Length: 491
Image (cartoon, rainbow, N blue to C red; front, side):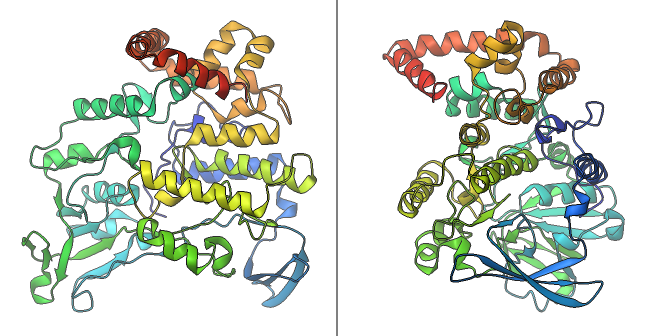
């Protein structure tokens, strides 16, 4: 983990639903704040006595009776043990096994080469000429951080064109400031176009750079607030994909024929494999046949119902695999609430294996049809619909009509037009929390406090709605839209 890392989601959208991140903390948290918050959460709910520290899981294997044998070693004792469990939840994440590209001459290049997971401090690259390979969040973060100390920074992008890049703040609001009204009423294509225009109009993008041609909503945008200034100033120079690394003068040749000389360091920010070394791979990929069917488009295939359950092995759950346009912590929390409800028998059981298989196939076909194919598009989900779907199973869905009945019009308006913070899933139903209403109000107060557009946000959405209704009414789409909206909120 590098020193300058920040969360890509705001604290208001990153919080656990029943333990709000302090409202006076920074909007985007560095690793120290995240660590402190996790420690506070664990202490508040007395979790530490239930955690076995200094323990490495060696193997998790299924037994004939469908229970699981877990073999592990306690490092402080250097002693291997095993236990049998009825159910296993895998919550270890998948940023463990780094991906390295294969370029001609990598073994001959005399400069330093490393994967981004080994990058810690910018100062270690002072006065160096550095090439960063990749176009994701880490690549952009590292490249920007290096501009303060390196003599020159280059960034190699395989496609030769910039990805969609969204800053952490856009028009006075956090980039993840989503609300229920826009999420369910404004079509995704229109929301995407609005954001695309905001990005293009708000930032100086050098004319020689190729802009993305795919719609923003079909991609996983990179998040960075400073990259455009660096590109405009020339402190970061974009290069296409690498063709060859050479030993002579530390040269790097690119696919367009251009050559850079005297490159001191190459940092490969090229992602990670989805890998669980303690499990047989077929458990979470679905097996060789499924991998061959989908790996060409998605590279990393995970065959999980609701991004959690392998259909053949319903007594093991994977938490935190899904990649959403929302924060990791609340998605993982909702998945955990769903899984624990199933274990306790308090919610309806999983569908049959065949039904789960069909659901996953539909998911992948939908991704193929609507999203740009990439290594991570196969684990992508739409944040609010996903959270709402799971919350309905759990029994904590914040139904708009019930919110209006219980809390009145003013809070309902905040609920619909304000930030859709995860705390909304503690307003009603199972494990509701009395402090949820006040916490949501406080978060929205902080969110709008410094926004010059905050006081006009409701009016802006009303204007957008009027224009949308006029357009839809021309082809009879208005009635269709209302019917869809009514079905969504009455499921």
